[in-house]
Every structure is written in C-alpha cells, then in structure tokens.
Length: 292
Ligand code: F3S
Image (cartoon, rainbow, N blue to C red; front, side):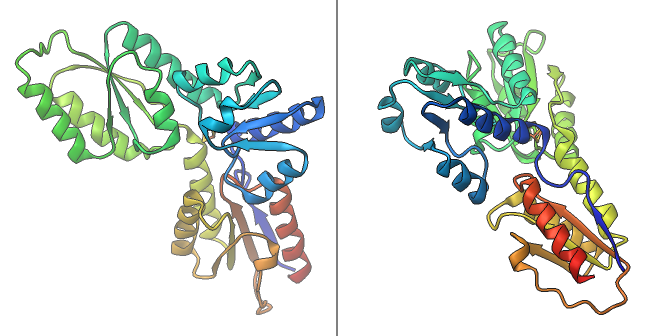
C-alpha cells in the first residue's frame, strides 16, 4: 500500500477560510445575504451558497437596488469608496477582508494622510491592489517590476520640485507578491537616496503552500494538484510540482482522476490551490486511498 501525503497547507489560506466561513455563518442567521462579488473563485462553493440563497452582487445597479439584508465583502478587500457605497445601501455590512489586507489599508490611509507618497508593489489590475489604492488620500504609484521601479526612480529624480530630503515614500506590497522580486524593487528605490519606508506586507501563505508542495513532489511517485481550471495559483503549484515529479496531475475534482497504478508506487502526494475546499481534497484523498 502506498503512503499518501496530503500537504498541510493545501487549500484555503486563513483569510479565504475566514471569508467563506463568515458567509455560512450569516446564512445561518437568515435574511437576504449578498456577497460583493463571488466570495471565492470556486464554482462549487459559489453554487452551494446560491442554493442556500446567497446572491452575488456583480454590478452597481444591483447594489443600488438592495434594500436591507446583509452584504459580505471578499477576503482581498475593497476601496474606501466601495465601502461607503455598501454602507449607503442601509444593509448590514460584514467586512470579511483578510486582516492582513486590512492592515495594508490602514498603513496606506495613515501614511498618505501624513503626507507620504504611497507606492504599492503589485499588479495594478488585481482587485486587492485596486482596493488598497482606494485607501490613499494622495495619488498612488503601482510598481510591478524592476523596469517600472527604474522608471519611477527616474521621474522623481528629474522632478525639480522634488526634495530628496523631504520626499518620504511609504512602500507596501500586494500580499501574494513574490518576495525576491519585492527585494529587487526595494533595492532600486532605496539606492536613489529617498527616505523609503518599506513595509513588507507579503503574506507567507502562498510561499508556504508552494514550498511544501515542492518538498512533497520531490519525494512522490505520483503528485496530484487539485485546483480550478482558471486558478493561477493552482497552475503555478502544478508547474512547481511537475518540475520535481514527472507524474504530476492537475485535476479539479476526484472525477478527473484517471490513474493506472503500476503497483510499485510508494508515495502519492496531494496538494491544492488556495480556492479548493477541504471536502474536495478529502474526496480525492479517499479515492486515491481506494486505488493504491
Ligand atoms: Fe489573507 Fe494571506 Fe490569504 S493575505 S487572504 S491569508 S493569502
């Protein structure tokens, strides 16, 4: 019988679990329940919540039509303007923003109010970054790579009104940003001699999940990665595992499992992307156990 190793970090991170649990708790309390966008990028979870009467708000029109009930926000947070819009409906607002993201909102709000220039290291199209931008009192610069960091440094350098002595820059990062890339960008900004206050707000959940997946895959005869088809963090996990273990499979649920045991497998590894619920991981585990 093969040994099955399921990664401890497989599936939901702390913030996503907290947000999903919040919705189920609010369902128990009753009343019309809305989520401001799908609570997580997992069709099965969203469909299950819909069956329980949870409605996903996808537009401003829908939002303005709401009279009463409960609106729950997602783990990656919203801007101040959106927050005000939700409150203006008169519905009960439950903020399920991950506390790690909320902390970034506070840093940006306070430091921009104190006159510091805010720089976010991350992807400006990501909803988390858009939300963070919305808490600044002053214009924000988003930097995603070293080229953009050099561009930014040049603009400030060439600005005659700028005074390096006084230019305080407060830098935060998107929680899922790559730590090495973050360091490289900070190094570029720092070498220009500005007063850079750097807040490393990267969350370790993603890194830990990837490191554990890699460690398991390096020992496994077969590695299974569970995740949504359009989930980029799951695709990344697959890529990492595939490099370590040629027999790596990317599946959405146990129904996609199509393994033919050779009979000499000793270790089967399992991991899952950030939006994969526990029950889906357990189902896969059970089916693998039956096969090997
Ligand atoms: Fe929060 Fe980190 Fe997850 S910031 S939502 S625990 S990836």
